Image (cartoon, rainbow, N blue to C red; front, side):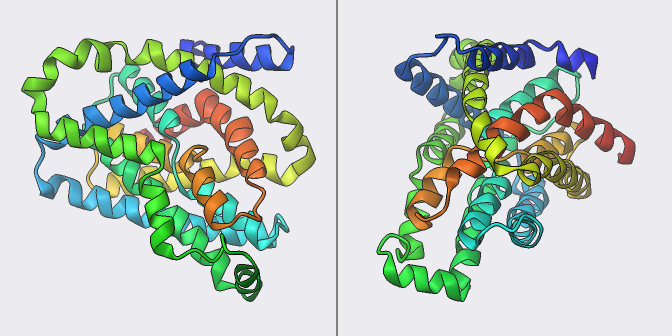
Length: 324
């Protein structure tokens, strides 16, 4: 645990968070932030595509089914917990379900680096599972919102809320994060390992240092979300820690059950335990405009993201090793 707390990635997050709390003028320019996020998403997609070109369909079928199962099951449970225990309204409960049923590409990247540091082998096609986990949860959450009588009443009054599922799917697939992941995978798959070799210094060797800059910015954003977390109360903070632990344990178990290596199962656990703060907010703002996405983003960035960096991923490693 102590070694993980001293990892440069987590320390960069602490630096950014401290800068935000102390009201430093530290801030990455918006253009730099956009460039970094574009690089990270493309790099993840490219490496996944290259590895996908080298595996058979049989190797990926069971892990893909396990991932889809998580994407369908988790938002239903989160939605029920948010409404019954958290006493959130239907729209806000659906928003929380979409964010926590989906996955964070940055947490995924951090998990890859920690697994690599622990010298655990993992499958190269894991970015494919990241995309599979990103999309279904958002659709399930929107369906849960619209399936209620209250949602139907809202939809009849709001043109945006009444958009067809086709429009929502279009919004999700063409969302910047999903589009870049899919585009990167397509390029990596079509080019193959031979043609990709000359790009490895940028997209493989430089990945962790560039990720550190992005996580520094995440620390700043997390500090800015602290007032919203305080307003949300005990439930959101508790949920932001307990939910990842339970879902991460389930993801690790399903990963091993589906045939993934221990390293791959740790990454699936990390993905399941993470929460989206890029694709999910964009889709929810279109599909459920009355939802307060700020609450979900505050929990995802202010509680779950730092928890996973500091303690969550080592716990998922321990759990997978224990049951493996």
